[in-house]
Length: 93
Image (tube, rainbow, N blue to C red; front, top):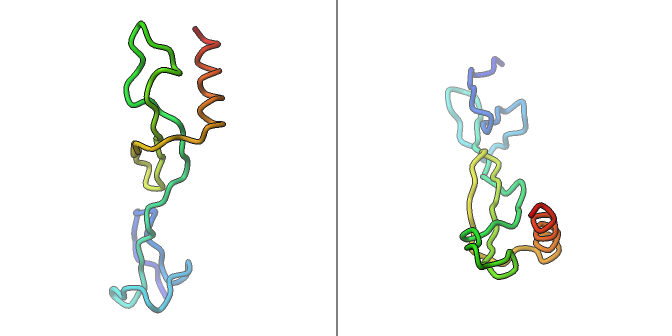
């Protein structure tokens, strides 16, 4: 079986684990993987104003997705990760 030419990294051929429930195209099975979160890091909603500290501002989460895109989510970040980031940022000031 010859592999279809496809530069798209998130297409799987039958040789790479596509299942029978996948869509058939030109005799080869292909499927698109779902996009998933690769990494999640604390990120500010807006940077601090001159009179604010890093502890005063609202934080959310920046997600790095498997398709190399970023997505900001307005939800509380992991407390330990946020504290570590704030300590690092404060040490740089």
